[in-house]
Image (cartoon, rainbow, N blue to C red; front, side, top):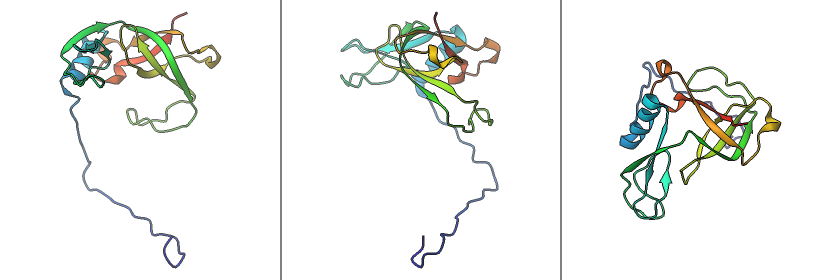
Length: 159
């Protein structure tokens, strides 16, 4: 509100050209998505100091501050450590369409990794999802892969 209690003027910016941009996911991010796209598997990176394995790979170990260089293969299975059921509708920036709700976003500790990886859990019966359940990654067909996070379709519950 302005000082004289009138409604504020709406500010708007119009661009004549699209604002295209790109950013680098770095050497290890590229290797992570290449491994998914080429081999349908995950890789992590191991700390030479404390031995922690991170997924996706990163450059530096948080606790040790050591540079990380040793890539290691990881399983496509893990344990669901937490989850959230999302009921808020929004436009998915990757598809331009409204994401169907509800959907479940899971926090997964992949077998062999020491940190948490998050992704969609594919289960329509929400009462079946429990912390501690085993899950497995489901990847797109190779012909559909683009080298990004969407190459992982979802994680499914292992029954």
